[in-house]
Image (cartoon, rainbow over all chains, first blue to last red; front, side, top):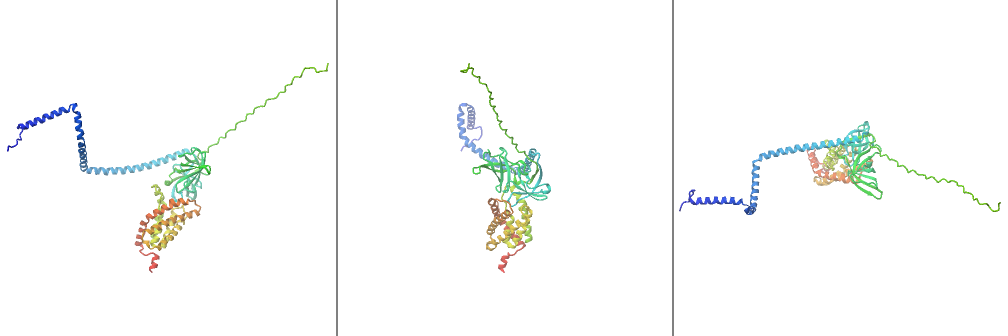
Length: 315
Length: 175
């Protein structure tokens, strides 16, 4: 058997080499021709799914390899990221608390600007009804601090939350919150001035506003303010209406409202010791129309001229 | 056991009067258990009505001191009556099973709120009875029932540890 010729000196090998080089050159030249572009596109369409499949598998395998190779780095990065998340979460929580305090202080500043004549005394909430049956707070101010029954109480931001229910000692008294069943506050709707009475609806935690005029144009979102009865100053915000019901039997409207103060989270309050709050709206009397008296025509006696005719019989 | 009971009830009264009313609303939870009723019922079923009455009276008195809203003696009276009611469960031989204590705790919790509301109404404090029973008493009874296995087991263990004896009623029967 004749041994295979592996050297380049073989003519068949050279021929093959030249042929392949020529084919390659031809392909190169031909591929540059725009006439053969559709053919190339068809070839690409056939090959594309195969290429995509292989590419996807390669990426997956490459990812695994990368993960194994960077395992330690990824673990360290994960630990660092978790620490960063914890730190940011803590800072976020702190910022939210600061935001809340800021909002309270702003409301307090607005409250002092809006009610410059009100005098208040700050108090700390010692406890609240632990059974949950009543909405009552115990504060650390009492008779020695000038506290008397009926005084208005607001939260630190100025929202009205209730009245002093009873003074139990020199440095202790109880606050009846506006949501308690026993609470009844004279209010008015800020937008329309409509008067009403707000009653607490605990344990539902809502307010029921009654005796609202049937003709009043009330709307959801209307603010409720204190009407200024007894020792409660006028104009303190206490709630917001979310539902209105017309009572045709009593010829009035009733509204459901929720308190704006966070009654469950109060730890400091302000007891209003004096001041009138916003003034009552003054009623400008409408002048009566003046009656214009039309003078009667004056009657002037006009002498009727006598007749000049000579009477008969007389010379 | 009475001294231990005094300490436990004092701690429970403090948590019930000062901690839960602040912590639970901040967590957005309006439902709160009544640890005092739970402990009184559990100890009554485990140690007898005498222990239950002592625990109830001391715990109620401490609770009234920590919570100045209620007149002193209100919760002491309520919890003593709760112990008497819970003693009805002593006649049931399935006391060692957790189901009966669970039911007794739920019933006694509702009864506690009925007693408390009756006393407050007699003292002139207006209440919405229907809404309070539904929104306050029933949820408290449910939560107390859920917590019963833990506290019942704990008190049982403490009883075995500090005073391993049968309740008075069973001692009489054995004798």
